[in-house]
Each structure stands twice: as structure tokens, then as C-alpha cells.
Image (cartoon, rainbow, N blue to C red):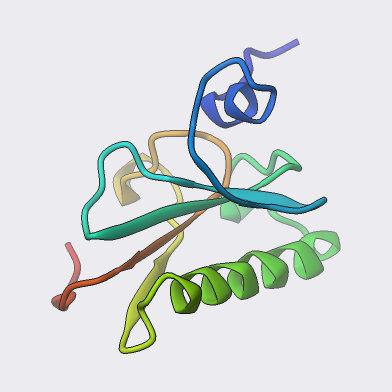
Length: 114
């Protein structure tokens, strides 16, 4: 069996984290290295290592993650603007092989991002 990702360890309670939201499909935590005043990670309970490995069967889950990201951004005061990011692979900045959605807001976000 492969090693658990940090997100699986957080979900299992092995590593402490401030859970901002949870339901049967996902949970959301504060990023430990925030890049904006609001920086959450919305993480599916199902391990999908990378977005490029998601299948058509994951479509509802992917949509749910984005809706949760939207709801949290609005609830936490980012109605004037927020960004969602999904990194795919090392060259995109992905550091944990467990798909997750970054939610950033609370300050002006420049473009291009990187």
C-alpha cells in the first residue's frame, strides 16, 4: 500500500489542521503557507492524484469541489473577487499528489499568476 498523502493524514486526524468545512465528499482547510489573506484548500476525500488522472466518473465530484470553493469564498468575505487554482504536476507547482482546489482572496490578485 502506498504512503498516505498529508491530506489523508489530516482527514484521519493524524495531523492537526483547522477544518473550515466538511461533508461526505470533501473537506477544506487553511493553507499552511498562505499566498493571500484567504487561502483555503478544498480536498476531495477520494484520492485523485492529479486532475489529469480524473475520469468522467469524477465529474460530479469536480463540480462539487468548485461549488464548495465558491460558497466558502463568499462566506468568508471574498464576494468582491477570489481565485480558484488546481495545479497539475510539478511544473505547475503541485506538491501533494492528491487533487485539491486552492481558494485565494482577500487582496487584489495580479495576472498572469506565475
